[in-house]
Image 1 (cartoon, rainbow, N blue to C red):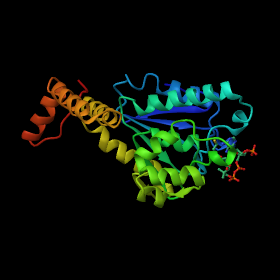
Image 2: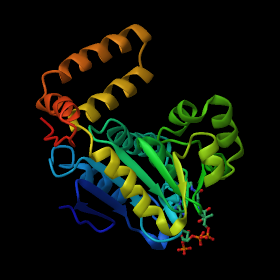
Image 3: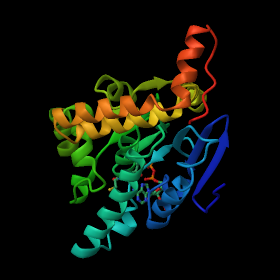
Image 4: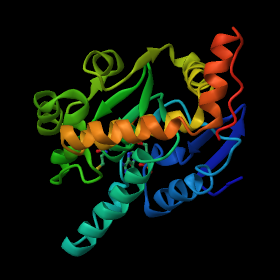
Length: 261
Ligand code: COA
């Protein structure tokens, strides 16, 4: 179990909860926090006790209020590229993580925090969540994939609006445009996120991994390649014990007991 200065991980009922806890700075991402998020994901991919990961921010105010502006303020052109690449790499790892990653957003998800939430596969927002990419107000642009991923999620027009205005959107608006999957009362955020994660965790683990792989590769490739990959993964799943179990359980009118094999 990973237990660092700013990021802690708890595992219960097949769900790992990774919590970013740097509340004095609204969980802003400095290099150490980013490294600890990366470290937290080490091992979760291969741990059979984990089928879904929840990523959240500690405290009532913020998911993550962005990259640490104190650090960004000192960067030059070369370190700027490195800062962006380092953040991008960790978020890319989350996006291509073999298990579903659900962001539980209970407050500000700004800049790098919004990008982090977008790199997760699903987003549950509390009514207090606020999403925004305010970078242009600081003289920069989103650098952890925000100019790339947001448009895929909400459409180019809405993404351009959010990036150029830097305005925050409410949880309700985020749900309207597909940025949040679900909006829940603030006090129910973790319980409702765990419920959603639990529904996912009941399903066949290898099928979940292949479903993510097929969908995310499809977004990044052409139709023919994507359909061919889907068929290959579909066929591959026929080699799993879990497929036998899932279908037998249906026919025998019982709940499937998947092993992830
Ligand atoms: N980087 C570094 N520090 C940050 C931060 C960030 N992205 N976001 C918040 N903080 C710090 C504040 O500087 C403050 O620290 P201090 O108490 O040592 O002065 C602390 O977190 C609390 O924030 P504060 O601004 O006092 O809270 P607030 O409720 O008045 O405002 C926000 C909340 C989120 C609106 C405001 O903090 C903000 O605009 N943050 C920056 C958001 C941003 O531009 N992110 C993108 C960065 S690329």
